[in-house]
Length: 473
Ligand code: 2HG
Ligand code: ZN
Image 1 (tube, protein in one colour):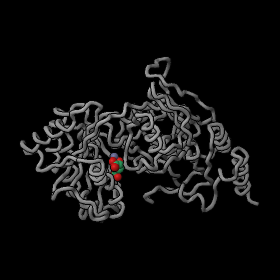
Image 2 (cartoon, rainbow, N blue to C red):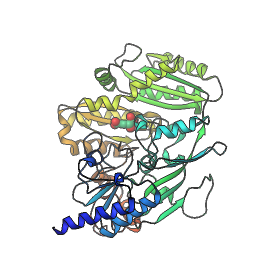
Image 3 (cartoon, rainbow, N blue to C red):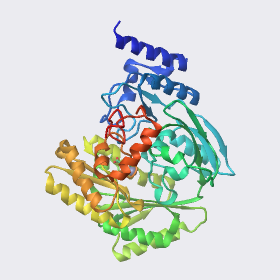
Image 4 (tube, rainbow, N blue to C red):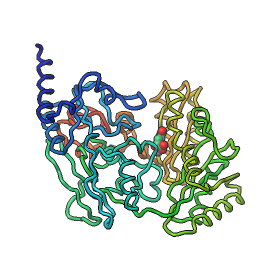
């Protein structure tokens, strides 16, 4: 028996001993789905997959790995678009799947809070809130698979951010495991708590590099009784912003979603799923949803549409009459990512710029790319109401991924934007973050990483560049 075999056997034996049940440790072929992301773009082999059921088991697994300097890749629903939840090559590592921690521990309908473990699927949280006439407003296409721990660790956004904020705004407390295996318990339900550092904010959006989120107390919202959904054809992104002003004037803070979809994105959804807009159109589209507990939404939405049509900011529009019609309009938006995947490889950009710069950003990035590359197709869509644009590149040019990233991100930087609005850095954007983030901020990030994970065992190679020891810069 070689040394490495005996070390490996000892690791497995230790994992089995802390997890007990054999099904909680996977090896061999059973690990495959955990070692590659759902688009087949990122991933590397792991030594094992551990699937603890309790926070004590998570802590025990972390101790087993910390003693052996084995890295840990925390994983939820594995829906990351940035390679944040799968192993990278070059480091001995296990995947720690939180998917077995799936209890909803408590719901308080009066205080409008819920305590959910990391492995609860987002849609399950939404349904549990709905049973109490409440709303958990984080929502996006992957909500049937993504899990609470993952959405907290990535500070996920989605379609309702302009009204309800990012995931960060919906978290009141966390339970987490640190790199030495200690458990930090902070599942409070307080809206006001200035007693000391708000440490949970460090873990939210840290992509599992500072600690492993095992449970959270979530802030729910009243469930609006009325909802209205409209779909409009708009000549260009400038008109979409004009429409946002009309909609804001009429609907105010009832606007829950305001999404822009490019003609090419609609064409892909039609090509791969046979889904078509409700009217003949070749132009850009905007999907607006408003929700409120008081009535009057329809009149306000009609007034907004009339203003937009009269001003020439929209050429056509429909308001959904039924839930089924609203769902059909949303299907056009929610199938874009899958339609893009069916079209072949793509280079994704998840950027944000100040809202009033979105049209300039789209124009500048489009011409910069066309000047630099031949054979590309752009699929542009996103959450324009909060400044987030998904600016994805398809076609033969995708081979030049790093160069494409640089062209687009230079335009983002020129518009004072961010190279990741909601998907995170993962392994995909590590070098881009190092390039665009101010050195003083990178230094502070490294200081935090070193303080909380000195041996770099939590999700190495994600967010910050690997450098096994963080003393190396
Ligand atoms: C969305 O807004 C997701 O649908 C995915 O954030 C974006 O596929 C993408 O680029
Ligand atoms: Zn998005």
